[in-house]
Amino acid sequence: MSTTKRIATLVGSLRKASYSRRLATQLQLIAPAGLVLDIVEIGDLPFFNQDLDATPPAPWVAFRDAIANADGVLFITPEYNRSVPAVIKNAIDVGSRPYGKSVWNGKPGGIISIAPGALGAFGANHHLRQSLVFLNVPTLQQPEAYIGNAEKIFTEDGEFVPSTKEFLGNYLQTFQRWVGTNAAGS
Image (cartoon, rainbow, N blue to C red; front, side, top):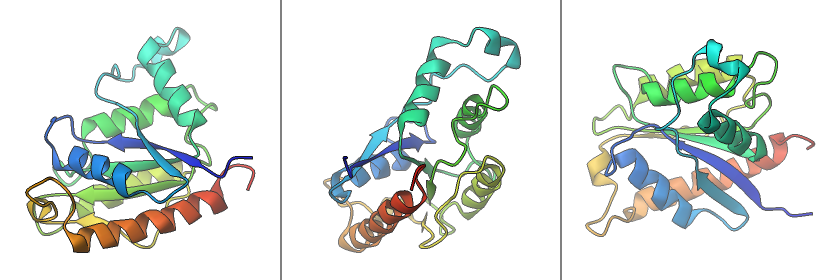
């Protein structure tokens, strides 16, 4: 039996050079052995409309399969107007339907929020937690990961500065244990 945990990683910013995407790709490089962060693209998901659930669009089916087959889920989110971006909310809605078949149910999760301001997207982080509680996603509580002053966490080469690399490396180790403890069948 493989001990490798595959994590569906959702990036809440669509901008190609966003801090969120840069953070997610750097996390892939520093993830501990046995933890694989697969970025699941959410920008092309058609908006959730229950009328489409009888014959779901192919992107919905692929997305739902990706989440269902992952051992856990990691949200990397910026903050838009003290909440999460629409693409994250849409992904949550698409994955939660049809009623009674939510791909989120029991899936261990984590949240890292990032912003150029000092608050580190605190509002988005906690707003997202509200939805995850309802969806029965056991979400890592500690350490909390609010990354503020985003422009200062990367070197000129695009890598994490040492203090950020250490903090997020520790976060990922804790998250790996969280997923192992809370994964279905554990």
